[in-house]
Length: 99
Image (cartoon, rainbow, N blue to C red; front, side):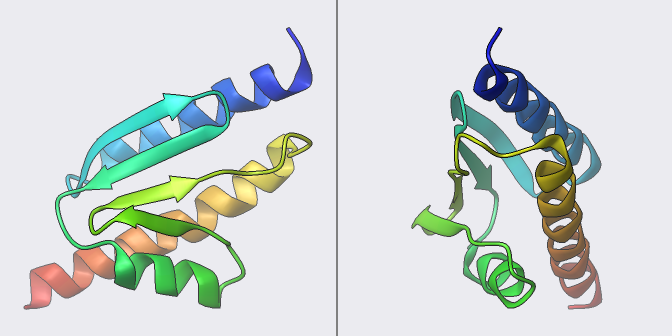
């Protein structure tokens, strides 16, 4: 298995872990390192939060976050990205709970 296939499997596993943690994640989908995370709400605020923290992601639809890293991404890079995305999801979930 080449490096990009290994890191794609690792990234998808991390995103699936976030899905289990946050009910606002409806679905994780995609092929290889081109992945989408569909939310139950508008993703713009989460994308903005991530961009402010240095994680470059975007929305493909109002509720879908596109994650498309370079093929040379490392597990360390993925862990850093997941940490930022986790913080953003926690922040958004807290806002939803507090109204």
